[in-house]
Length: 388
Image (cartoon, rainbow, N blue to C red; front, top):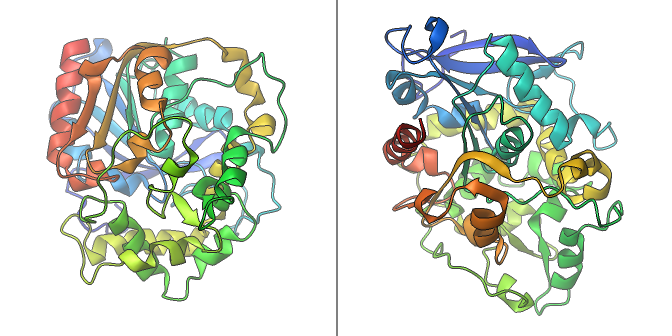
C-alpha cells in the first residue's frame, strides 16, 4: 500500500483502476491459496460497498477474514468518496452544490460496480454486500443483474422497491419531502435528515463545524453506535407522525439545527474501542480533502426522486430474485426508521429473504461491521455456505 492505514492488516492491498470514467480506489485481498471455488482457477468474488459517512476503509476488519475463507474480496471507495476521482478532473478540485447531479443517480452508481466487476476480469460475483447507503446500490445491482450478482446482503438500511411506473413522477415532491413538511408541524418542530443532507447549506456546515471535523465525526459515529445508551430501537407504529419524534436527532433533527449541532450533545469524552483516534483520522483526512458535497449528492438523488430515479421505473414490480440477507446491529435505529419498511422488504421486495435471513447482532449499532466484525464475518459465511 502506498500509504499507511491504521488497523488495516497485512495482506490487504490498495490500488486504483479505471472504471466508468473514474480512477477508482479499491482495497483488495486474495485467499491464501488461489485456485479454489471457481472454474478457471479464480476464487469467487465478494464486493463490499460502504455507506455514509464512510469509505472502503470501513471494511478493514472483515476484508482479510473473508479472503482467508476462500474469497477474492474487493472494497471500493465509491463515487464521490475517498481516493476515487473522476478522470480528467485535477486533484484537489471540490464538487460544488451547483454541479451536475446525474453521475450520482443510483443507476450510474450501479454501472460503476458492474464496470468494476468486468475490469477485475470476472463475469460472476458470489455476493455484493452493501452497508447503509451502499445497501441501496448493492440491492439494485442484484435486482437488475441477477445473472451477474448471485447473492446480496443489505446491511443497516432496509431496501425499498423500485419507484412505481403507475404514479406520475414529480420532481422535488417525493414522499420524504411530504414527511419533512409534516415534521415541521410537531412541537418542537423537526426535519428529516435526508432532506437536510439535500440542502445547499449542509455540506458547508459539515465541512467546517465549530468544534472541528474530528470532534464532529467522533460524535456522529458515537451516537449511531451501540456505545450510546439512548439507542434502543423498536418498530414504529404506522400512520403516527408523533412516533417519528421518538427517533434520535441524527435522523429526525431539530428544525433549526445543523447536523454537527444535532449530534454534539452525544459527543463522547473518549475514543471508542472499535474506532481509535488513529482510525478516525483516516475519515477526517478523506472528508477534509473532498468535502461532504459529493457524498451528499447521493441523498439529493434519492430525495428528489422524480428526477433522478425515473430510469429505475422500468423495474416496477420486479423483485430481487437471488438469495438475500439483511444484517444490522440490534442497537441500530436504521432498521426501523420507516414504519413497516422492514416487513415489506422481507416479504415483497426480496424473493429469498424471510425471517431466517434477517439477522440483528448483539452489541452493535449502525456501524455493525466495524463494531462487531467477527460476528459479521460469521453470519456472512454461514449464509453463503447455505445458499451455495
